[in-house]
Length: 553
Image (cartoon, rainbow, N blue to C red; front, side, top):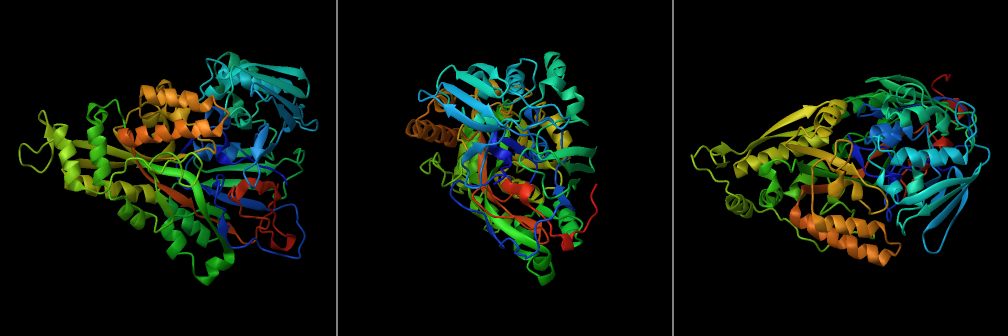
């Protein structure tokens, strides 16, 4: 089976909206309409058009954090390892590997038939260069910690790489799912600290993956074409077009008009707007628990939100079940922390915040927030409690969540103004620069429970993922211990305690884990639901010749 890389194999990613199908669950398989059966053989050609809710921010994924960019760049680049349909780690650029019993020495043997899109052969030196890039102080990446754990990386010969770790590292093998970069093109930009300015990040990406960039019109579309020299065999679908459509409602209209072949749906669209015969004939529907949670977050540098009693009060003021029933229509489950129910690191015995307005008011009063002038708004030191709540444009689900929270907090005596922002501007001007008071966003989580990048106090810089500026010394210690153990039982103890602290601190209000609800055109064959969702084998998807809709080229 040809492996492709799920979105979440590297790290946590900031999500603009529903994912089509990169990440799945450890315990649940994707379910949905069976893959279409046909006597027609697999055929090369045709175009697959997919909707992206958010614009992409670049094409070198090692320095990006948003899921839309990962969706695109993940088709252009490859890692040493990936995950198969059952979520087992398998080789991608690596043909095989050996990992010493003491978890300190990892040796990869590379495939010998891999070439970069410009014809240069992939060598062990590219792997070493990628390691050097990730630890370079001028590389603006949120994923360097995996590589700080390495003592040295060396090319033994053109197709053998040896990595020595400073101490046992739990994510050693899977961390090499990182996208491998070409030394012959990017070395000067890394040396000068200009990797984001390199042509490869905007218009000339050169990877080893199944597709090559043909065109990128920001805000409109990205066009990829099949790589005929792909080391696992040329993909069947000749052209992959990502249409950037910043509205879930417009995406659904495009599906009805057959202007796109695939998209992730909202719960309302999936349950109530797709059951008529014409839609069921045109598209196959799938459902599975996504590794994605939605949250109500705070800028903890703001003194109002630095008091955990305020955050706990807000948690009590939100009726999560009512929110999930109204927004998800049953396609999800409550989040009590950053781990998905049913996974091995999940701790179900943590502090919970049942809907309780009286308790919420009492907590705010303890924190000094009272209505002293009778205007219906809580105030403190003469300042009324009002703040701006940001979320991203086009995501109706998040807009509804924001509106429900707005109404709940109004009843509490807190005024919330909702502001909807275009995704790229939201990331660049507000998240990166920490110019927000409160946010509704989602995290896509990896298959390993290590979340050092999001919760460790050292990760609060502008290029880091701890954008709420959370800091807790015990959490730092637990994160450090959890990633340096190779024994799962030990890691369970660390991560269970981590969840207890996060539940008490409520640095964000964890709302829910939603289900992925993708639909794919029924003319596309080879879609096989699995614990890894549906996109793990995309190069094997095909359209029988008699169903081709587009000319390719």
